[in-house]
Amino acid sequence: MTTVSSESGDLESRVVSLFSTTFGGEPDGVWQAPGRVNLIGEHTDYNRGLALPIALPVRTFVAIRRRPDEAVRLVSEGMGELAEFRLSDIRGGNPPSWAKFPAGVLWAFCHDELTIQGIEAAFVSSVPIASGLSSSAAIQCAMAIGISDLFGSKLADDDPGRRQLASMCRRGENEIALAPTGGMDQTVSLRSKAGYALYLDCRDDSIEYVRFAPETKGLVLMIVNTRVTHHNDDGQYGARRADCIEACQHLNIPSLRNVPYSELEAALGQLPNEQLRMRVRHVVTEIERVRQSARALRQGDYSMFGQLLAQSHRSLRDDFEVSGPELDAAVESALEAGALGARMTGGGFGGSIIALVDSDRVDRVSATITDRFMRSGFSLSPQFGEGRASAPAGAAGWHLPCSDGPPPDARPAQP
Image (cartoon, rainbow, N blue to C red; front, side):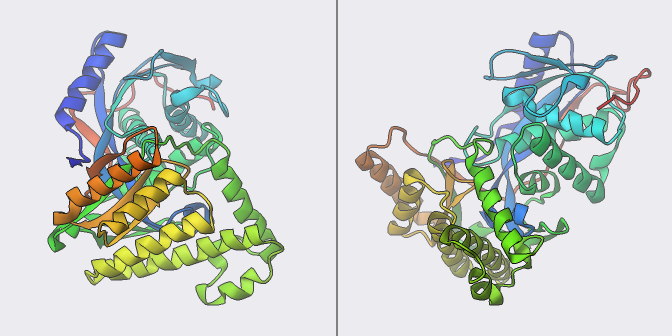
């Protein structure tokens, strides 16, 4: 099994090389941000609930150089053509393709009247695209850290600043990339801690670190990428969010977080149809599962944690209806092969699952899942990795001397 990690030095060298080849000369600096896997708490963030993600060792690196004007030029390894636009051109849906994610960050800086100018930037990543491991948030957060450092905002220097950066990235993803996500991905990318899960309260963005070290119990967190593409801006994610909003209107509450677990049945009785009841049942029970999971991890009870993972998948499959044949097959096979628990992770409709497995059963679980995919006639073979709770976004090692602060002629860009 391949460990889900990145060779940081190699990625850093590649991004500097890509920058120099594309733009000539050297960048002002290099920054990086991690992908993430959500242990439990799916579709709870935009419902102001609870979530329990970890940052992963896989990283996106960005090399950036400031310009004296408002022109923006972006290139990404493997993404094809150079993206070119001006800060004043950024709006919902423009620029298209992958560039909308870093552009959304630039838009947020402008919108908040923070001093920035145009840039040239190159991206290289080891986060698998469309895998449910939040490659888009890694792009955003690497860019956000770099822009903050280069133009003197210093928002990466402490947790309140990183909290603000996460909010800016979320707004950029919502308003420019037009993906109606809730901000969990950016929060964990910017505010994580190595060796710990992030117990995130999405109502007030408060966090608590919960020790997550399954290796101390002889366990491995397997990540299985089904390689079925997953996108948060394809309409399905938004449809589920719309269901939650409609349910809140019927219940006359601001968010589904306001439904206590003990009063779930009474709330379900006030809803007009089964689809809304299913959506609410998932969100409310999932928030409770996050509470129980944090408690189990604090007590070192990984057996209970595994049971909660399996319960979460059943809820996502049956009540929220965001799973799929490959995700279900991977989860079922992992459990059949002896995993303590398994579930889909991410927004759904493709991407990855996680499975909590005894270290001596990893090969058996991998073989069982692969065999199931072959017998089911799925067109792609799964990819396997190990997830470990990793460090947050930050500066990489490569920087030009005296590169701090904005260029002398920098001025606030207009949104």
